[in-house]
Each structure stands twice: as C-alpha cells, then as structure tokens.
Length: 238
Image 1 (cartoon, rainbow, N blue to C red):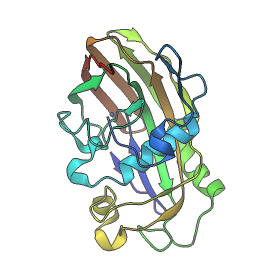
Image 2 (tube, helix red, strand yellow):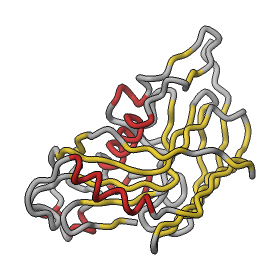
Image 3 (cartoon, rainbow, N blue to C red):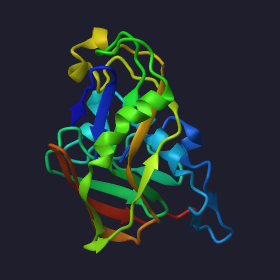
C-alpha cells in the first residue's frame, strides 16, 4: 500500500523476495564459517533494512517484487548469502510461490515505512533532515499491531529496526509515480536522506523441502496478509 505524506514521499510495505543494490549484496556483516554455515550473529539490521528499501525503490514496477502477486519475480536480482522477501503496497492478501537455494538466509519486513527527502516534489516544500524524516515515519510503526510471523505454523521472533540514513535512486518507472501524481512529481534521480522504520525478521537458512511462511500485520487502516510457499532447493558447491 502506498501512502504519500503531504511533505514527503512515503511508502508502507509489509513482508516479500527481492534484489539488492547496495551494502555489498547485503552481506557485509555476515561470515561463512569453516564448516560452510552462515553466521548471522554480526548482522547490521539497520544497514540491511536500508539495503532492502534501496532494492525496492530502484526496481522498475514491471518486475518489482513488492508488486508481484504470484512469486514470478522472487529471484529478480537476488545475490549473496541473504535473500529478501517482500509484502505488498496494496494490503491485499497475497500468496507467492518461490524457489530458494538451501544456503540462503531470508530477511524481510513484517511491516515497515519509508520516507525520503524530495524537495519540491510529491507535495514536499523545503528540505527535510534525518531527524525530521524519522519523526514523520515513526507514528505508523508505533501504531502497528497484530504482528505475526510463522514458518510452518511455528511463531518466529521479530525486532523493530530503524535504518541508517541512505540515498534512494528511483528509475523512471518507479513505485512513487502513481501515488505522487505522475512522472514529473517522481522523476529519476538521487534523493537523500531516506529513512526506514519497521519490524523485521532474519531467518537462518531453512531445511530443504517445502515450507510455508505467513506474515500478518496491521496499522491504522492498513493491513497485510502475505503467504510464501517456499521450496528450498539443494545446492552443491563441489
């Protein structure tokens, strides 16, 4: 679901698989042990959430995984040891089918919100700094409730994450064009600062086979209900 604040570009999303364009493939804080296992202990969730949004906001709408209603774009741009999952902007119940390599961790929002500084565009007047953007983005997440994530029916822990400030680089066909009122109000460019606030999950690689992931959340009049039918495929590196 896309929301536009009068003073900023703001998009709300919940849950989804995506691509990444920054932070070294969103894996800079992770290491591979001598046994080949992925170590997520040092993961910088604030940088990872920024990378998640950078991937979404830099992807054209035609292949944007947040707009994907079936899972056909779940592999778009995926790289590194962590894959991204997404929700929807519409809030409509969505079921996606996705094939994932067995050695990939999964990072995704339960519900999140992003605001970017875009002076004289999309209803914004003068420039906004990071502190002002954080104040604008927080109330929606403060009001979030009925948060639930389950894998095969088992609850999964989540945490609230406030991203590091970052720059967004939307293409001409970007997710803000429609909510902002046309391409002249949401042109391609480099816009900063941008900040995110939300609840996120980071899952260790799942066992091979089929799994069901379900994400639920509400805030105000927005709700999300996303189901992923995941097939975890074996990987051979020998």
